[in-house]
Image (cartoon, rainbow, N blue to C red; front, side, top):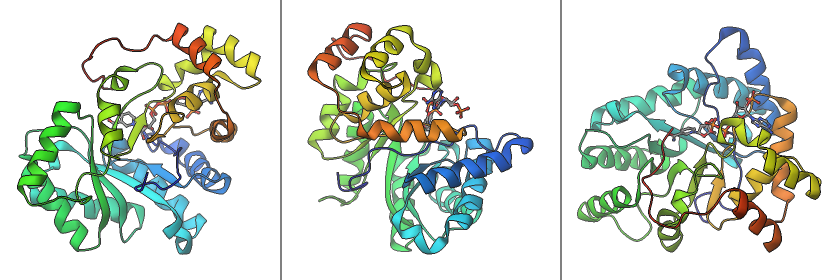
Amino acid sequence: MSLFGELRLGLGTWQMGERTSEVAREVMAVEHALEVGYRLIDTAEMYADGGAETIIGKALKGYGLGKRENLSLVSKVLPMNASRQGTLNACERSLKRMGLDYLDVYLLHWPGSHPIEQTIEAFIELTNKGRIRAWGISNFDLDGLRQWLYVEERLGLSGGVGCSTNQVFFGLKSRGPEFDLLPAMQALHMPLMAYTPLGSGALADHQGLVTLAKTLGCSAAQLALAWVIHHANVVAIPKSSTLSRIDENFASLSLNLTQEVLSAIDALFPPPQKRQPLAVI
Ligand SMILES: NC(=O)c1ccc[n+]([C@@H]2O[C@H](COP(=O)([O-])OP(=O)(O)OC[C@H]3O[C@@H](n4cnc5c(N)ncnc54)[C@H](OP(=O)(O)O)[C@@H]3O)[C@@H](O)[C@H]2O)c1
């Protein structure tokens, strides 16, 4: 997994920055995540209209921008902004809010109406200017990914240059990608970023998962995350603004799931038997 190296878990930030009264707590949460060892942070210009990026910027100041090289910071351009010039402008706004010179990965948030060529040309220009290190897409099903790769090829991109990841809803609440998208991405050595891996928190209270987790001495949330990241080429990005949960989620990295446990999970959340439309949140 070259894009994220050994990283298998990051911090999501959707819904941070929405309430002024929560900002100090959320900045502290991101700072805490960095202290604990999270090295990947996912955000988007859409989240709280840039408010989540501002929170990350504040937390990074506390962390020390000198250590920024160790981090993978991911943001996304809204489809409605994803024309060539619109993407260039959106990226500059995101960088400013986060106080950064460059983003590690810049994604198109979901397929939109601007021609893919324009977005790709902007991604190339941003890369050439050193404003992003890599780019990718989000919420693209397998056909959409193939189409994107086809356009990149037409533009002369090949050999590892080009789309580096696809961020999709993947977890026990959304196993569809296992059927087609994930195997295809694994074959391309393209990491899949799994969003909403805790089912928006619902999996933490799922009775079957809670019971199974108890037998393993972990929490249901940890089991749900361990299941996501046991897949090759997958990085999970759970969101939490709660310090204890940030720790709890990070500890899922040390869980190893046996075949017996995987079968028990399959009984609770059956794997897909056929191709399913990509679920989107
Ligand atoms: N590309 C896209 O279109 C897209 C779409 C959705 C999400 N995302 C990204 O993926 C990230 C994660 O997805 P998500 O935020 O939708 O959902 P999620 O990570 O599955 O769940 C987050 C929710 O679970 C709670 N939670 C976290 N850890 C917990 C634990 N150990 N026990 C119980 N509850 C826990 C959080 O509450 P507290 O914060 O109060 O702890 C929050 O309400 C987002 O933040 C965003 O960065 C991307």
